[in-house]
Length: 403
Image (cartoon, rainbow, N blue to C red; front, top):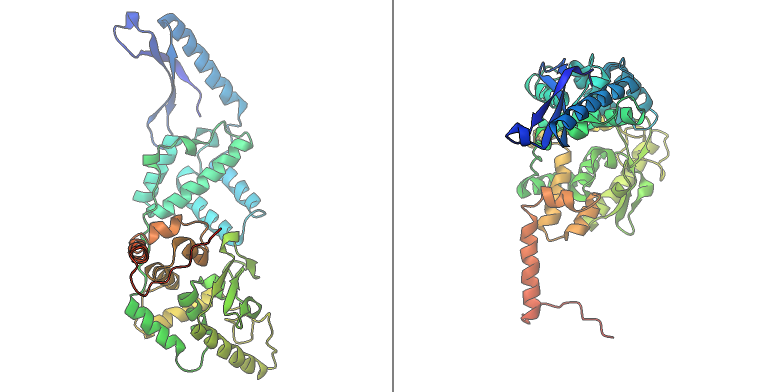
């Protein structure tokens, strides 16, 4: 927000001007320090030209009074630093790290700008600059990365409004077509042949902690943070199921509860996976016992050599070596979770159950990402209904309830 320059202008909306009763009141605020474009504030008014001129003077006085009510000295760099310091108390380290990276990119273009000068046009221009010239890395940023920066900026400016540092959040005024869009394509899942090949490798020979982790990703849809945070107390081998309730993040020093409640879930195990876990539990206890370490329900399923939590980055390094060795180079661990979801959908699991097994808050994500797979089992469901109604042999529906 800048001090009004000049007397402003009254612009007629219809001609001739003599009979016009609709006007645009326009105040000139100078040139935007970042974009160099002229900045204007406008307001619509109905009445005579004389009344419009009086309304314009009142409009300018209102703008200048608003200017006087807010601290004009605070720069984005000053406020963003304070914002990140306060944020340490409210969010996890991983979230804080992401916010810090995003703020770092924004500082390249907004650092010296006064908070009261940042408007929607300036923000849209910064998003364009991040796409064209890039951020701290020196490389142009993807739409997804810029979308993250925009989201963080929206939080920063929203807090500034609540602290009465600025009158309104300029991010809310950025036109939707000028806001960055998520352009990251969901990575492909393994092909069925690749998934079956990997499954066979995971099930052969003696089990080990690394291949057990991959087995849980492929067969249960667990993320790296989830399967490295799994303890034996979370696994019920007799009932063949496991409970996901913790996450072993790269940023935190201790085991955390899952970031969102809906990620806490119970996942069933096949007899084959349960048998493999049972074999690994006995072998792991034996190996730790040889080192004088007693395994118990608190021991991580995917532990390091001394029975403690394995750092997720350490697991990631192992996976990168292993995938190259078995011909799956380029596939990330997250794509194993993606493969699990694809198989769920393709095999006819209903979308609500599939979403719960994946730990999604609703069915939206699953429907968006796996839209190409879902129609197949929808068609299969229709065939099943037709088979029941037509009395085809071999179809035994659940009996109707009576009474």
